[in-house]
Length: 193
Image 1 (tube, rainbow, N blue to C red):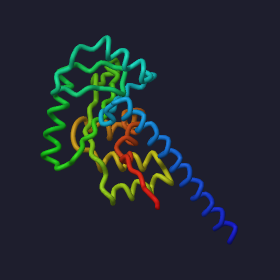
Image 2: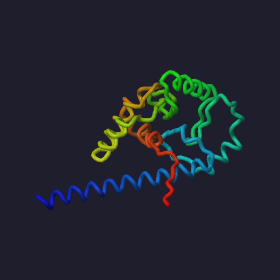
Image 3: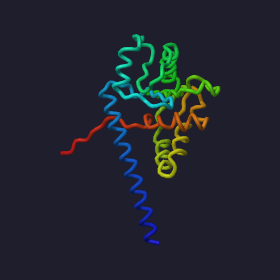
């Protein structure tokens, strides 16, 4: 009996260490993106191989026309989103910040499969979880990360294409991979004397 309790405690410790390691990796990537002046709020997924930062920056420098300030700029994607849709996204973000009283709105964009009858783009607007929602997520994440992510997405969804949360295929292979950007940590430090 004591061995079983010890094994359970050891497994929980390993899971916690693994989660903290993943958070450190994500934090490093977040700091790198901030240093490269990438906007971590805009997230895009299309299921194909993603470009490296240097490829994306070179493409943006040469291929994209100047974007008016009222349109959002996509950084983490390799698909083109029309200017009018990017302007609509910027307008919707401003509306949601006021209507839902949130400081930050996260936009997840997943490219649909038009040949299979899907929309060209699925756009969802999300907020950060509150303390209770984050605590529930952390508790369930140790047991089943997919279910924990699904629960979190349902709780923090604000507006847009609900299929990003309800459709299993869009959720598993689009939305879920981007949820870590919503629960990222802020840059912080501690000074010990």
